[in-house]
Image 1 (tube, helix red, strand yellow):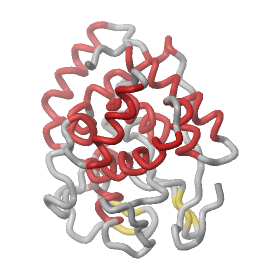
Image 2: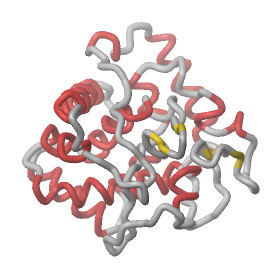
Image 3: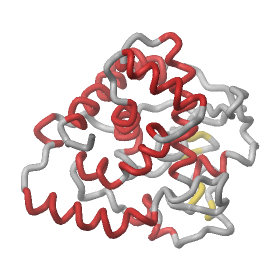
Length: 242
């Protein structure tokens, strides 16, 4: 799908396919340690959306598109999800477990119209909506491990969900100079909320999770993208998160 200059982004499917074996927990002691680590540090992430508390830079304090740090972050870059590389050594299951509260807030516990639309669509197709959003985020950023890649005024996407096209709560497209991109860039929950809005728009024509992922991507790599999202979703179902 071609992306206009006003949107300022180009589509690039990210990530490598993770086989089922590679995503499973293989060492029980490592899983237990990761659970303990997640319990002690996850509280600093996804406490607030950008709308609730501007300056909550829990995803990153660095704007890759502008090439500069955010002026008033609430934490140093090495304490953000991207800067700390918290997810680097974790398995898929433990990455998802660490951020589970974020996805619960954005999908399962949200009263927004888009979340309700997405939950309704998922329920009719036997899809778990939070796991579906996790699978997409794993494909896009390895659940918060891969930073935004921007060159020459173009980005592969923004934030944990790699947002390319953003809609407000009324379905209006955000312009490239809209200040709301700050929340999408720096804040996990806000980015996930915008991700759900885009997915909700796409559900009207999607018959399955594969079809939804295909329509969401919309590029020449859409088939491969959809295959990977479904693969990650299958792996995530085995993690015992819900």
